[in-house]
Image (cartoon, rainbow, N blue to C red; front, side, top):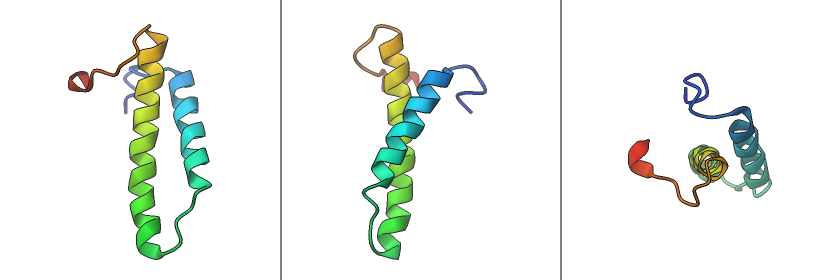
Length: 67
């Protein structure tokens, strides 16, 4: 949704996917851990995209109230 609204660039999205892939290498073992891991990876992907966006705008922090 954020990409469709042009709030994120392609670089932000690709960086977020890269970070999610890295996190996926530390795959949990049980089914419950897999389900928890999915939501954690989704949160990581969003955080990485927002951090990339902030960095590209010269900021070192993400203003969470903005989102």
